Image 1 (tube, rainbow, N blue to C red):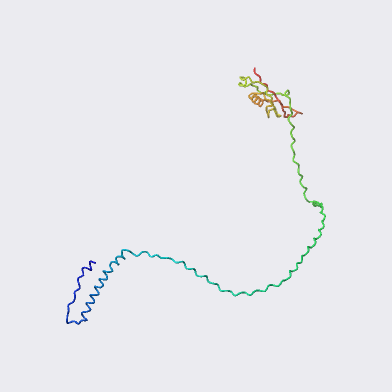
Image 2: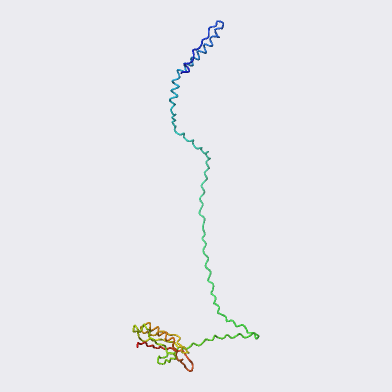
Length: 238
């Protein structure tokens, strides 16, 4: 607006009688056109400012119904096949059932051959005689030891009977019966308690004493043999 106000009024050309009238009319028309443009711009200023202050509202787009899909292509029609004539009725075929052949008769049972004795091969005259196999000699079983009564015992070294000190303080006494297996030399080979005295200390002392004893050998027919005896050992307090 300020730029338009500062414009100076148009300078009208002076009348020159020497110029023809058509030459003086063109500048006047040009100046008049410029003034018309300026007036039009002033009139349209408010409309331009209104458009700049209020931008156009967003465009609302209304979608119409979706277009229907195109119809599927139609297959070309095949020519109709001619109808075949129905087959003529035929009778069912005849079925022949074969009969089973009779079973063959059982084979006759043959007798079982008995064992045939085979003759031994002949022995050549020049063949050496078969060695004789000797039977293993079985050692004779030794006879069981002879049981001897206690009255037949003869000691070469009698057993040392001593009452232990603990048994003396406790007053232990009694008789220990020992079963003794004596070998041919008169030595006790096996000693066990046949009947206890009732006190373990006395039994242990009797076993130890009998293992140290020696007997007279027992002979039968001039041959020394083993024998068994049940010998008593008496333990009493003085």
